[in-house]
Amino acid sequence: MSTQMSVTEKLTESLCTDRFSAEELHQFQQDGFVIVRRMAEAQLTDTMLEVAQAQLTAPVPPVEYEADVHYPGSPESRQAAGGETVRRLLQAHARHPVFTQWVCRPELVGRLQQLLGTPVVMPLAHHNCIMTKQPCYSSQTLWHQDIRFWSFERPDLVSVWLALGTESVENGCLSVIPGTHRLQFAADWFDAGTFLDPEQPQNRELIAKRVAVELSPGDVLFFHSRTFHAAGSNQTEGSKFSVVFTFRSVDNSPLPATRSASLPEMRLPAV
Ligand SMILES: O=C(O)CCC(=O)C(=O)O
Image (cartoon, rainbow, N blue to C red; front, side):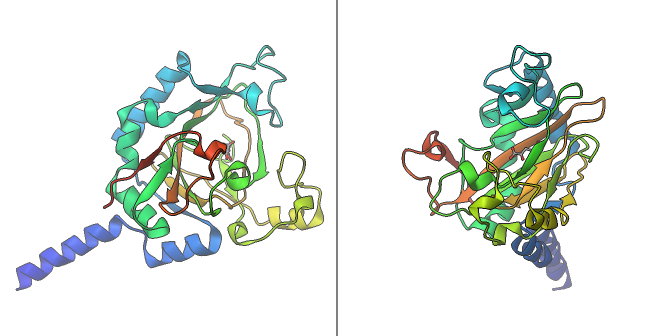
């Protein structure tokens, strides 16, 4: 009896580490984000880093260059100095089996099922990239909600940001504004590029509540597609790499004939 109980206890403990705790779930609901530290081991992040570095050097298409994003600090054009600095290695999922292994991990799928229900679906049209920030040329990303250019039945998707190296304020880590996934915003709070206009007093108040998401290799940020986030440029001498995928509930389909419906999706095996 006592041996059986200890086996059950061990099983329960291991299942719990594969799932969000009640506190973490509450934090996600309240704040629109939650961080799980050391969720991916070095072997996985190192393999991803090797793939990223090799494909960045080539570079292996499809890629997005700094000049393409037109953010503050971006080179004017691809022909300008630094214009062909890669910002995103797109379609990460198709680049190496390690990315499929990552998104099928029980500890990732289990947590997504807690947030989105079962089964979880991964649209390939959004994020699905290796984000890089290079030391010489990198731009800032202003305050935005990812959902602004996405088209689904409901604006409730979850993105998963895996740090492959250290992410700090100095090398341009993300910052988030807690609770913004629950707020409604008037159209005139935004600039023409649908970023929050930082000059407006109510936006200044919101932005003052920002939290920097500093990460170590293997740490994972889960964030809601309505959570406002921004990021600085890379002020260090090293490159920054992160892997980002987005997930939806099976009953939250992309709207027909939109960019969100333009690529196939992957249904994650349930755990
Ligand atoms: O690392 C960054 O600059 C942030 C990127 C971002 O916020 C996004 O792609 O939605």
